[in-house]
Image (tube, rainbow, N blue to C red; front, side, top):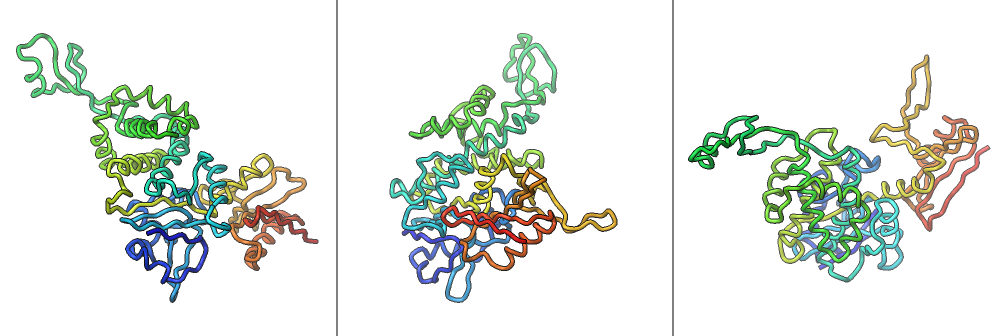
Length: 387
């Protein structure tokens, strides 16, 4: 059974009767809880999205209704499926969500959330489409390298002798010595995991076209993984699950690692074809909208970010001390004709007092008489002039 709902909506609980098992898995649970149970949340919680928090819920009970949030995407459990579309959709086709994914995350233009083709593989396709984005993002930090223990059996002893292996391989003695040595290596279990994911994607009908979006990174991974062997896939998955990346510098690789494991395990267990697994991929609609606006304004506007502490401003300065930390969504680069822009993922009729007070505070801070509110209804731009 499949149910389609809209984000930021109130839905009567009776509509969820046909997917009651799935509803029990997600209702009144936070995104953090769902992420631990196997749901992939984009962008990563807390770190990137100003609107997304670990305590946020997909469905929250309120009397006889469930209230949905800014989250869009796809969830499945057994034979039950839930699709959360944008509230700005007219009809069955979620063109807005599709468009935002194409512009912000560079999804291929053939994705269709509400397609009737191969419904069981819809989540798998979503995960695959995310792969180039996460690969490019991770490899901006350079190729991931770690110490690994290499085993040698030659005359150039440079490590710890492996007695058991030496007796096994070098009896009678012919001059070689079996030894182990810890060395920095780019060809490690993380990079091997990425290589296995690349090889799996290549087998999809659209795989090569999709991988061209990150062809330099893909070529580098393939060149680096000289030890790659298809039959080692299960071993590589297990090693990555036992050793998740923990270093804060490599958080991008940690996200990529988790995505690769989900892609490989999804295909291995054939989730969606009768396996009783809870699975899903979710997107923050407000974050997608704000990042889309950034693609339009990036040449002429700064884009402060709260979570990463980029471009912070202050409302007040008292005794040379700045207070009242703020992060306007967009600040024009032209400081002589300063304009403050605010992205709102809501219909125009829902722009109310708090929204106006927010932009007014920004305007008074920058001593401006013009402010822009970008509203997510029919791509409308609303400009407010104040005198």
